[in-house]
Length: 317
Image (cartoon, rainbow, N blue to C red; front, side):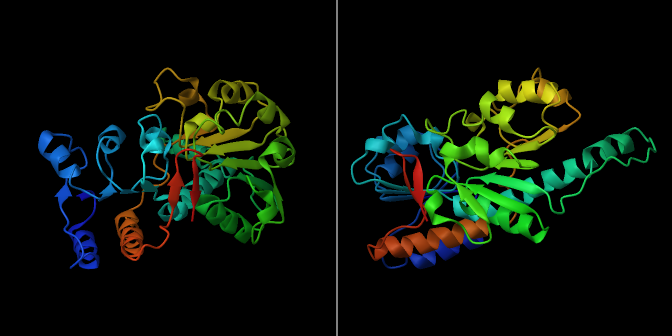
């Protein structure tokens, strides 16, 4: 069963992969009615997006999810569902997320946000306070698909990259130093730009807190994608208001949509995007390719790509 948001061409490719092995039905992404539930109860593999509580009550064996974040799937029984496999689509969003975050960094560094406000006001004011990325220090927390793509772009701009990952012993190509999460304060201490691109969950909740922000150098900028729960937003606001942090580029928040009363909206040194870093016109095709690969693997009883363990909130690529 495929939940829509795929193109007709994508649907045809998926149908070709399962031809002679399974049947394929197509439903809108917001399907919840009795007819949909009856179809779900006859389904072995689900592609796309669906309510986790509906899947938990079905005989579903595989869920090929079109999203990267999995925290919204917790607490519905999927983590204890026998013989059930869930795969996310985080690997297909690495490029747009990396480009989006790099764009936020470039905008804050060159004060593009200020220039756009001046343009809206028809105000000509030459500014000489803009900085450079060249030979500055960057810390990337999370070296999955998005973090790895971001590191490559930072290296291309001659930035010095430090990475943080759960298993620091793995290291990472192109990154001079990789530290464990337990040394996060040490990792951010000399960074001019600090990024978090890690998934949400109990273990990562408020990983970026008052202690970590205090450890960052004065004037450093902070950037966040993936999940807003990773950041203690109140602590971030305090460090921005005090002037300790030089700015922030934020795509995710603890409460979404971001309430109109949140002080982040009014800060000149903050750029807000509406949880859109992973969006791209190329995602349907990438998701289709990932889906076709996993369907072929499932048919051959091979390990699935991007399999996600909801019990530990970790993925295997």
